[in-house]
Image (tube, rainbow over all chains, first blue to last red; front, side):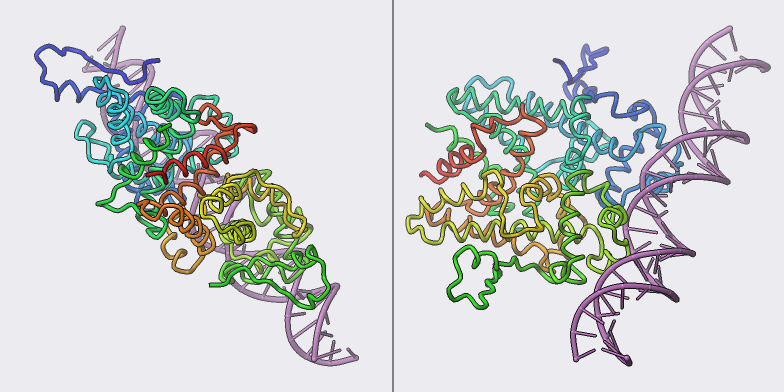
Length: 239
Length: 239
DNA sequence: CAAATATAATAGTATTACTATCATATAATA
DNA sequence: TATTATATGATAGTAATACTATTATATTTG
């Protein structure tokens, strides 16, 4: 299944950077009413909603406040997203798609399973840095939103239906990619999917603990989650 | 710090079971306006809120609906809890206090650090069973609430203030107990707190995945989370 | 039995999460 | 250029939520 689309129009003689600029994260079109990438207003909705959710939290965030902030109207935002829950799902999907893109890009050419997994854990657990390829999205801020709000997007009574509707495909594919890499390192390890899901969920959680409950973690800026998870995963995969 | 209070009034000649019946989970009194254990209405609020949150989910749950359900008035419930967020914190604290009680009870007498940790992981990751000592609380249902809603109690903008106010002490102490047991098994392991927090959070998450995203876990009713976590923890603690 | 306390009933407020309608601005096309 | 879609904005309205306040009525306790 192809989900990261490369729009390679007129790519001759274009430098690599320009090529990468045309990468686009493909997101389930049931998550929006109108594609926010298709207009200026749409991009402002994405850009400012990230800033606003980060600032005041998802609970206090409303379309009315967002409208005021971007000098637009509440009703116009409803033309892009049915409700803020779907906007959150959209933002999260974008984030996981962006991470997946980096994962595939960085590990594709590594033949050795252990070296590949090692690099993959780095990608999945490192501190987020800005990606200039997407000017209207602040990935650092989006990462913080995912840390603080992602769980709320699936801890709902509607999760089974929304899962059926494919709202979590990107995340699930990411976990499966990690799971496969673990199995490639040790085919007899009995819990690759559990370990992969623990890695993704756990990485978010460790960053949260660093910010708010530092007595519950040994991770710091120097002693990073990456080191903790590399140790954990490779020890688990040992016989 | 003593937090599990044993009210051992008139305990001579009482059988063990009766003794255990007088165990009480002590909860930060800032979490309620009036102690729900102190009256019949209070206990009904606790009992029915567990059932109702389990049934319709925390988002849809309101004090008005609860009032109708228990044949009482919305305003009366507000005399026990400021809002539903604090009620959730109360229920979660009770749950973790109850687990801590079992942990201490079951591991206290085990001298060997590995055997002790092994038993502790069992307590923390096993499927919940009903405890007849607390008639107004359905622990199986409460466990499901914790799985589905606990994250929402700390993924808020107020988390730092509420942490200062001691709303999470029981959970933190539980994580620390597990962390200490891990250090006792291997004093040179550099991430005992991270591993302990991963264990508690991860156990909830694996049960959630079993219910809603079974492709993301290898855990089943037969191949339990307990086995996964025992393998994970003891491998991590190996040199 | 009086007084204190707990609970119930009712009303009211600001905000949320929308839906609906109509007006206007901008872009596409004939 | 005029016509016509289409996008956006402005305004209004609704049911529900999350409370607060007040008053009335039980129930418990001294």
